[in-house]
Image (cartoon, rainbow, N blue to C red; front, side, top):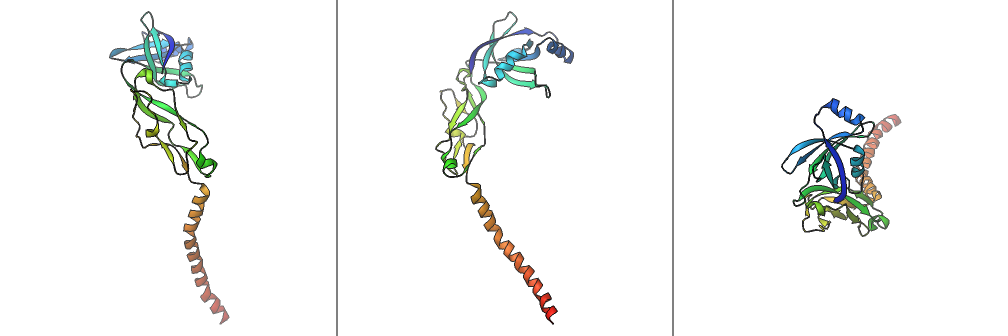
Length: 223
């Protein structure tokens, strides 16, 4: 989703661990911009600005402008990022230049809303299987989220990727249409009873064998 955000960046003439360490000490972080047939450009950016974008409602699907030095700003998207494993601060990002006239592939979050009738009345259990779906669309048509209302979902029923509305002409589903996003499974009590019923004949058979084996010993004592 396109946002009216511009992040300033400065060219980074040298690379390597020492240079990256010096950048982070100064409050910046290393990044690289590539795509649209142009050469990759190593830059330094403010991690707080990029982190704010990653934690926004549109997350890594946010398309924003990046201005490198005195060059005109270009639309970009964060396609890869790295956090410190302990401190949690942002260490590095890869930025993809975006051609607003060409479709791109993105993963869009799936948000589930409502109380399923199969849970409320049928006693079933709601399970979310996939929290994202892959689509292809023009950059300006990227949806923030797919909202799924499960209110009418009954026991043993599911919402699949193919049920999601493609709300613009440029949108095309890439995930398998039959992949389950969310479903309601039968109550656990029914499954437990079925399992107990299936095991019962084996228990009876085992018990019978023990009684038969004990009978000759009892007769021997009587003699």
